[in-house]
Length: 255
Ligand code: JFE
Image (cartoon, rainbow, N blue to C red; front, side, top):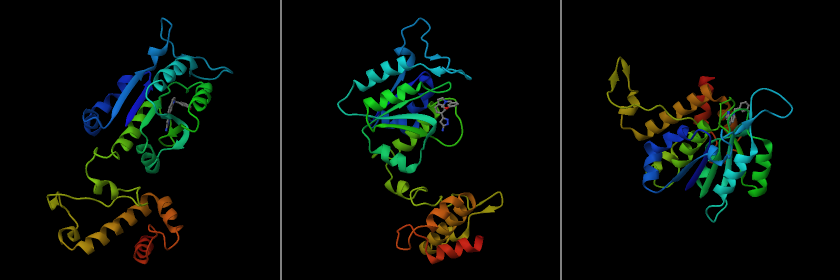
């Protein structure tokens, strides 16, 4: 997968050299290119921002550097990329979107700063890449720019690529794939500072362990994410993810 990131803070993307993503890059599974937006300015001060028309607080990113940066990046290989623009007003990123993005050969990220990017850049991008521009939010809170969102999105997407994690089972069993949060996990020692590992996990009884883990997932999801339980309750009984009678009994116990 090819990834291009346009930003005025290329150093902010340094974590993409590390850990799993760094390894995937070294192994040729990921080709990441970070571009400094200021390279696409022509004035002595490499200006990327200006005051907002109509007044108001802060500064807005000028369109010209964005136009030249997109011209340069899009002039490269023979396919159309998906352009992702982080913004607090975008569709909220989730595991479903991560799966969609993992199926793309080429993603381009445009990181804004200040109060955002001149609206004409979005319109121009939509003309250049019809149906291939998405504004994406990490969640309902305000960051200072798109870079942190890009780090999160790239990490969520890269770990879905074949060969990046190397353990298909660890992906299938994860929360947000089947509508419930994770079960709690434990390792050695069996007693630590007076806290015991639940005895069922030491029992070797696979059927009991599976049921206990599902019960824990249900209780935890009900406590922390009642919206997710409500969504599962709406599914028809014959849906593969629908709650069964044992599931409903556990949820009713907890109230
Ligand atoms: C930018 C800012 C006030 C933007 C346009 C570029 N989930 C998420 N939260 N915040 C962002 C994403 C994000 C992404 C890109 C950004 C925030 N800002 C700051 C400040 C209003 C804004 O609306 C600039």
